[in-house]
Image 1 (cartoon, rainbow, N blue to C red):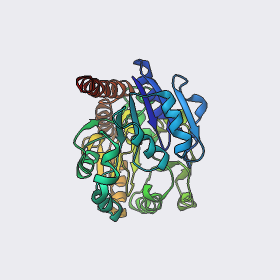
Image 2 (image 1 turned 60 degrees about the vertical axis):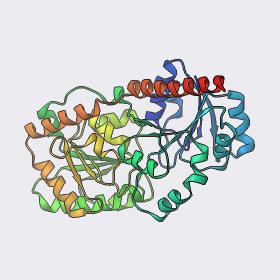
Image 3 (image 1 turned 30 degrees about the vertical axis):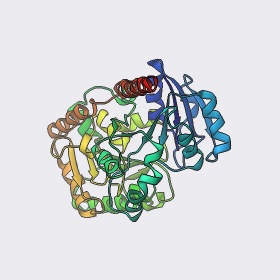
Image 4 (image 1 turned 180 degrees about the vertical axis):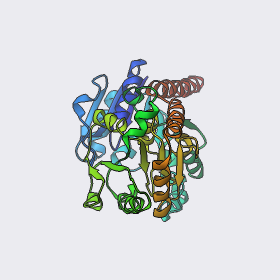
Length: 358
C-alpha cells in the first residue's frame, strides 16, 4: 500500500515504527516539520526508507495538495484535525483513499472539547473514515465525536533500543535516582514536580537524587534544589543510559494524551510513579505491581509516593521492575507495524471491492 502521513511533529520512536512499516513493503510519504519545540531529535538518524516532505511552516493547500496528489496514496493518515492544508488533502481524497485520523485526546471536560463534540458532525466526521487511537481513553472520547471504526495501538516506544534484559535487584537499588524526562512546559507539571521533590527530601533521612532530562521555559523551577541534576534535552541513545542508571521513573503531568516515555521506562525495567492525567496509565501502570498512580496536582501524594518508593528494599524494587517489563512487552514497533498494516489493508481491500461492485 501507499500511505501518506500528515504529521505535526516527528519523534525518534515514531520514526522507528515507520521504519518497521516500510519493512513490510508499504510505501510511505511522511509530511512533518523540520523540528519540534524543546525536542531537537537528530534527524540524521531517521530512516531513509521513506519519502519525506519536510516543512518549517505548516503548509497550506497550494503546497501540500500537489505533493500528496503526486504520491497517489491508498491511505492518508492525519495527526489531529487542524491545519487548513491537511484538511484540504482529506477533503480531496474522499472516496479516493482510506482517510485515518490519529487522535490521542481523551475526555477532560474542557470547553474546547465540548465545542468539538458539538461541531464534530460538520468539522471532524466528514474528513475521516476511521480513528486510530492508542487506547481506551482516547477511543471513548472519539466515540463521543461520532467515530465508530477504530484502529487501536497507535503508540509504541522503540523497545529494541530501551530493552536490556531484566534488572539485577542490587544494581537497581544501588542507583538511588528518580528520573523525569519530558519538555518542561505547563502540562508536564515540572513546577509541581520540583515542589513535591522538595517536600520528599524533608520526609526521608536519605533521599534519592532526581535527574531531569528535558528542556523548556519552566526549567527554572528546579534551579537551586538540592539533589536535582538538569540534563537538558537528551537524544534517545543517551536517555537509554539514564533509564538504566535510575531506580524509578516519575511523570506527574496534569495532562498527557498518552506518554510513550512511560513505555520506554517500563521496557527499561523501572518502577513507575505517574499522575492519573497520563493516558498511558491504564496500559502500563498497575498499582502495587509496578508502581503507583497519584492524583494530578496533588503534591503531598506525589512526595509520599516518592518516599515509599525510595524506602522499599531491593527485592520489592526488583519485583516492580519485572512488572514494568512484563507490561511493556505487549507492544513493540514490529507489533505496531504489523497491526497497522493489517488493519489498513483489510479496510483498503473492503473499500476497493465495494468500489468494483459499484
